[in-house]
Image (tube, rainbow, N blue to C red; front, side):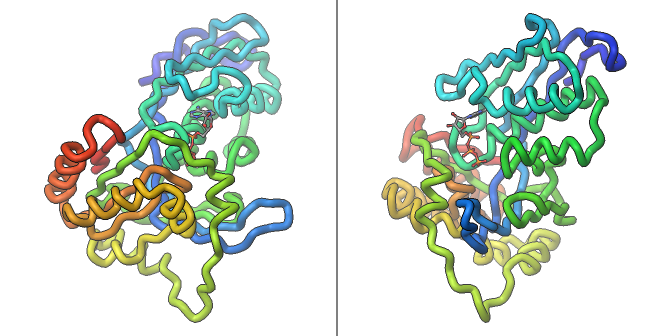
Length: 301
Ligand code: ATP
């Protein structure tokens, strides 16, 4: 996808560089603690998905000193509120490079869907800029990523990864990147992540076995029946309660073959895990015929 002319830092680059920005689901999302500063300590297992994904391109012909954002999606801001703008401006400051960057986002990941679209776009910008200017070490790039958003560091190297704290610990999970047979259903209303965290109750997990090692084993073994009951998101209870259409969606997915259905991140995207790609495809067909063109329905695997 890249066709830029890479130059050394003193020269002005030309051309356009592009990258696919993948989406994610959280197969596990446990809230550990609410901190006094309002942040939540979590433990999560991020799983990257190639479908849906955005395409992010940077060209180097914007007016000197500016960062422009171009995105046709009506709900994506094209000013300094865009996470790509934030990432680019932090990169420019840290790398001491004067920007003249036009960032184009081809949006396919549902916006505010809980699939990490904005975070992934921001990480793509950081990767593209650093490939072009080669000014920052991996650690410095990760720090910028975390300062843009808790999910951004994961997208710098989007392999299945466990994460903890408020996103500051991130480790490749060492499992195949091929997702289980899935269907994603993303209704078109947004859910505020802040609302979801505020209304989530932290379950008492004392004395209960840790789901993470079992989950990694099931992913390594591609044992989807073993994986399904381990999939869990602490944000789900509050979000399903607030939006009954999600409960209806879950029921329909379970009726049409899903082994389990869970919320992705803070939603409203939900995903079902199936026994086989064929059963996922069949369920997706049933869901499409029931719901019509909205919501967005994906079969990532
Ligand atoms: P996460 O799963 O990380 O919580 P999300 O998928 O729920 O994120 P995003 O699609 O990243 O949510 O968007 C959240 C909000 O951020 C949107 O309401 C949108 O206005 C704003 N936003 C800023 N930059 C972007 C971007 N590049 N793409 C999408 N939304 C963006």
